[in-house]
View (cartoon, helix red, strand yellow):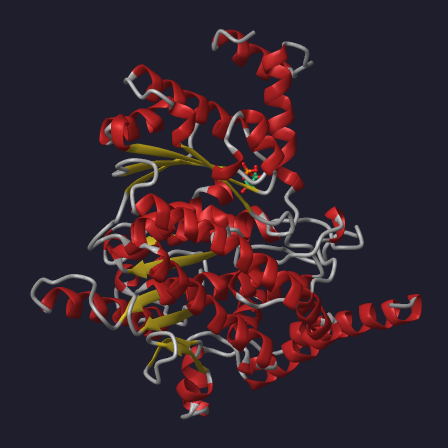
Length: 520
Ligand code: F6P
């Protein structure tokens, strides 16, 4: 882009924001009154085949009609997306462009499920085949009887596997996997208690293969195997990494290193070899179903324009609430035990990606960036935090997720009550209720988006993950920031190292705390 193109782009972005800020802020009730077709015009459906090659489809519908977006706002957001270069950025994402500019890398997580350049897709497929051969060999007993796996990793090397395993092994796990992330030894000890060392595999997941928590936990896991009579503990280790040479240096046999590509970011890596523990637990067929669900969302995200594009539309709503309505948080409530870890997963995806203060050109951002993502599970959360959503002073846009098909085998009443409660909450937040007694009045006009999933299976989980990856990316493009670096996590790590080496100079408070903790 030439300097004059750049200046024109900045001017167009500023003009779009000026227009957005000047728009009246309508009430939800008025939006529904003015447009009887609103639920249909603001609902999107993304579908995928029930089985590979089958004509039957499953999918999810996403109802944005209970947000404050209207035609004027959507038109202005579409102008913003155009001014921000959304089309070119999306093309660069899937075309292997260097969009992680601060690290000089592409972001090729799409290629893991077949959405990328042919060369990237071939490379990803070759690595997936390598992983599937190892998974199948382990299932067939090539490493002896394997009943358990302790999967060690942290951040992006743990949150995705933990979510997928928790979501997809409720009925059956081919291998019992325990994801351990924290350096607090209590976490690893808990996994040890649940596993028999004789039949336990250790999967060490780390993009860099240097992360102190992961490497310390991995050493302790090997020691545990050795102390419990396993002859060749090293033979039980599988490394999942973008730094295969470091894994080999650390002592993992090359044949048990499953590499992935450097341009796949940690928090975008579930579909790479980081997903090995998931594949071990659910089998390759189900793992590939997860990829297929993600691919369906990629296809939608690549093909649809403007407001028709569901992840982009979600980003319009996110920008509307953070930048025009001053919302500092967004809450996510999964009315499904299987998605209990989704808020944790989304916290890293959204906050590590878009919790930034500068744009890609290094200039300060023009407003707040990522909202703080938080949430929980319904109906539990209704009895804990929903008071604040309904009557508190904060305006909090809420995402509800619920599956039409039940996950349980109990009396259908369970699922019916779950589903009814989920849908009731969105209605209540929007409608509110006047009352003579102010303590009993609900202001209403509170926004929500509902994800209604046909069935919460592997494909749906893949679709939800890809949806949120693209939503995060679309938000970043609209704000002009790079979602693919995470320099903000480095300083604390460096200071911890200084403390360890005894070389750092610290403020008076930290010196006193170190002394009191026996570290000074
Ligand atoms: O500290 C943050 C982070 O770099 C995350 O981005 C990443 O997912 C996590 O640490 C783990 O890193 P690694 O996979 O290299 O061990």
